Image (cartoon, rainbow, N blue to C red; front, side, top):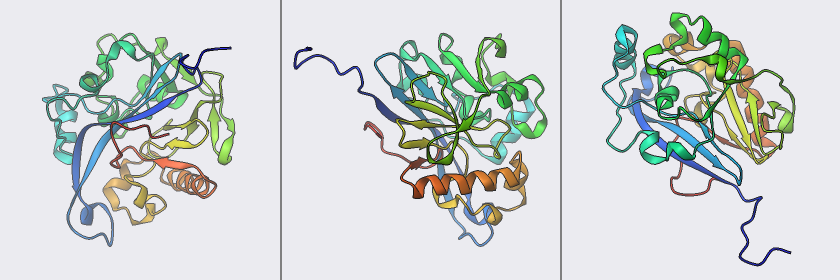
Length: 263
């Protein structure tokens, strides 16, 4: 029998890191919203177990971006702020990360990917297809991706089935502890994660938890950004139902406690 000081091989930890931020006038984002600038941090989440460290999203790339006219337009629409020390690679040792899961391919989620060349990239089939032939509205800035980026080397997940809380899930690690969640709508192949059966990393299912389920309040431009507005509304309903059943929802652009275990 292990001694009292033996490490617990079942212990896990979930941490949050703010990797830059942007801001938007809520009166311009939503109908009926009070005017005033709201800050939206770009969040990444690190799950640590005895055998792997899985990073969910990678936040913004350090400024200035050198990614062409599309990046200039993006910065005009959603100007990012990335202070010194705020990139994910400055907060997490890249050499310790075994896997990187991308919720989707927008710049505030893939910006730190270059810093993790040795981690296994995990994508949905929809994200893989988007990388193969991105459209303008997909918001993919290829120059932010690693040099020689090859989606063929990624783990592509497509086998989703009904799981806990009625969510559609896949189990890439075959251990029921870190499940990928199919959350269509915001982007083609948009992913979340269900961690330890109780915490849902919901990515950009909404701009914030308070806006989840209020998709009809969004103004025209943010609605146009969504890949599939009807699917986004269905995703919101499924997440709210999961929350009512006991799941804890963590949205990418809400502030969360740092230096603490979110489990």
